[in-house]
Every structure is written in C-alpha cells, then in structure tokens.
Length: 395
Image (cartoon, rainbow, N blue to C red; front, side, top):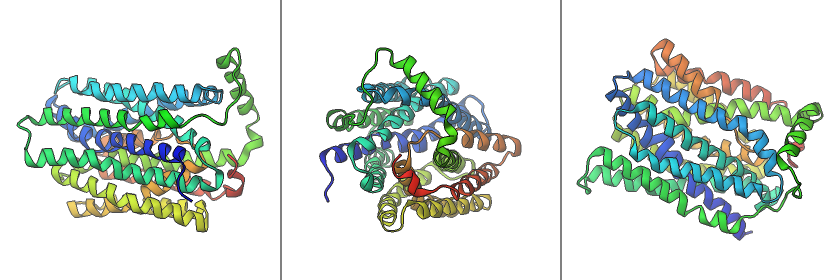
C-alpha cells in the first residue's frame, strides 16, 4: 500500500529536521565549536567535555518539561501549537548562531542549547503525531521511512556545504562558510516543514477544557500514582531511556571524539556523509525485517551492535578505525531509533553526554568516555528483555 498524503507529509518532516542533526549536532557546529574553544585557550579534551555537558543540559531541560507538555498536548489543537512553538525556537536559534563572535565559546554553547531545546521539543510532538497519520500495523514501516528519508534528505545541504568547502568556489573565509551552513540549515528546516504544518492534524485528542494546564497536572499526577498498573510500559520506558541515551550520545559526540583522535576535518566530514548514506537503506531494512520478525529482536540486534561499537572505540587509533566505527553506526542507528519511536516517543540523551564528558575529563582520553556508554546499552538491553512486546502494540 502506498503512503497516504498525511504519512508522506509526516515522513517529510524527518527530511526537514534531519539537516539540523547532521549540520548542527554532528558535523559543522561541533568542528566549529572546537575551533572557537581553541581560540579561547580551551584544551581539546576539555572542550569535548563541555560539548557533552551542553547536550546533557539541553536534553535535560526539555525532558523535565516533556511530561506536562505532552499531557497538555493531548487536548485538541495543543499538539500542533507546541510543535510549531518549538520548531520556531529551534530554527530561530540555529539562524542566530551566525552572530556569535569567533572566541565566545560559552555564548555559542548557550545558543546551541536553546536550538537543541527547540529541536528536541519539536521532535517530541512530531513523534506524537505518528498515531494521527497512520495505523498500528503500519507504524514500524512509516517510522522507519521517516528516519531513512531523513538521512537521505539531510545529505543534500551537507553535500552542498562540502562542495563549497572543497572547491573554494565562494571567495569567503572559513567562518563565513560555516555561517552559510547555519543559514542553509535553518532555511531547509523551515521550508520542508511546510507539508507537516499544512497536512498533518491531530486526530486523536481529548476535548478542550476550561483550564487545560491545571487539568493536565491532575491527569499527570493520577497517571504517576497508578504507575504500578502499567508495569510493562514503565519497564520499556526505563530500558529505552538507557539504550537510546547511548545511541544519541554517540551521534552527538562522534565529531568531537574524531577531532581528539587527530582525524582531519575533511576526513571527518566525508565519514559523516557516508554514515548518512549507509543509514538510509539499513533503516528501511530494519522496518522491513520488523514486519517479518517483530521489532523486539531487531532492537536487541541494534543494542548488540552498539556494544561492539563501544568496545571497538577503546582500541581505535587511526582514521580507518573511525571509518569502521562510523559504518557500524550507520547500519543500526536509524533502525533502533525508528522501531523505538513506533513503540513510544523519544525524550532521552541526558546521562550519556554527561557521563562521556566526566570520564573524558578524568582520564584525559575520549576513548574511555565512549567505552563508558557500554553501561547504558547493557542496562537498557537487560531491562528490555522483560518487555512484553504484544502489550505495547496499543500504546
């Protein structure tokens, strides 16, 4: 069955916001931040730790807000409003990055955190719209398509940036080129969000009430007080919190890690591009295999791959090692995110960046920071063993 207009518009939103993921979170901004931090006299391992703390702080703030915002969004019209609000915040602060001085590393981190709050907040409500655009039996397929086409779409502005950088076709400084990358990301995100705004609507909702905020707090308190009645959901959420934290941490910290290993910026950018291209077919493959074998064994497979990645990172010394690690990430990153999203929404990546930052600062070696993430995957995988998949189908 072909995708409906609503499904296509929802999938296209991944195409829109994934440009932020690669350009801001993973590639261009982390490299630029390392340079800005160096201009201010900050050592490489220290700036990597600060980048990790910034990611943890941004995600922690939105995660604290998520439960009550999500409860309010259950009411008619609010889900779309919150999606629009956070999308606007994310796009605005991505654009405003161009005004940060080249030695103001702390201000740069602050604006990045605000853009990350916008991006993460928008994604919470974007993910929540999955139940409004498709049916239960198509969720794995549609969610996987979103991530897959997101990886593919994000390559376009990234390739344009690479061409500008490699050819020097624009007679401008490196800083000006980075600023063009920021503007291009913001405009890409804005333009391709239009189908989501236009065609996706909240189908499942609670009728409006006089005081939605007060009522939402009461509903949230009632849910928490009766949490024991939803044991399977709680186990899944805790498991998910751990393993997806590790996934997102590797995604957000990979570039800083590569720079600390002495890999050139050009090589890093090329590796990240190839990772996106590898992720496209493998994410679709995960969706196809989930239809045949169910999502649970596929998520376990991805967790196992990530444990291998963390172990391998300890012994990584060369650019070839980084290539191998990146390709492994590409095989499983989209799959585990997509299948988990079709189970439930995402709101993690709090502990991982902070854990990696602390270990990196203590040991002075980024490899050990990555290795520490094994704990997150092991805990998440063990807890996930106790999740009964059939009871999650109606979430």
